[in-house]
Each structure stands twice: as structure tokens, then as C-alpha cells.
Length: 124
Image (cartoon, rainbow, N blue to C red):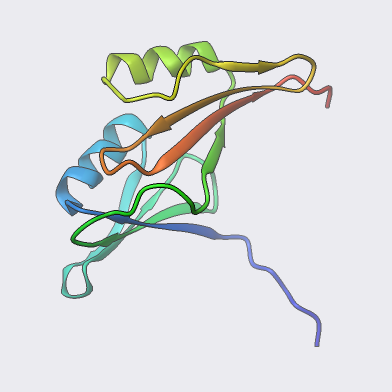
């Protein structure tokens, strides 16, 4: 039997404060709460990208470094940076530009989980 991949992706990560994380992701990443299961300290949020969700597991501490970095495509990376700046979001330097390929910006949620915004420069 062949493997059949579905149309949904959930990026799971640890957070130290579920309420604060939900509020941050709603405000900064424009996510919407899908459901919350407090008995198992878990929730899932829908991102603005169809079929891509973020799942939070509430933990005592979030280890830094390693793991996957979720990269979200944006139409205008300068506008996305301005949005992060207005929200006081910690960033890892300026927008990185790889001419003819992509522009990238790394930033962090309140627990130090790394994310990136990308703006493609490749012809479709």
C-alpha cells in the first residue's frame, strides 16, 4: 500500500504559558484558536495558511536551539518586519537577502521558538 499524505500540517512546539502564547500568536501571527485541551496542556491554532496549524504543548521550560524552524511566506517582507517591529518582537538581525532567490527574516516567539518570514524572488 502506498503512503498517502494528507492536506494538513501541524507544527508542534513547547510553550511555557498557554494563555500568553495564544494571545501572542493571535496578535502577531494572525492565528485563530481551533481548540484547547487543558487536561493534556495542549491547543492548536490555525495559521493564515490553509491546512497549516500550530500546536502548543505547555511545558515547564522550552529548550533553546535545535529543532525545526517554521518558515512562513509573505508577500512583502519589509511590511512583515514593520509589523514585528510594531509588536516588539525579537528578531535575529536584519532581513537577509540572497539576490535572485529569497529574502529571509528570523524572529522569535516569547518562548524563544524560532520562525522565519520569506519572500521569494524566483520567477514562477
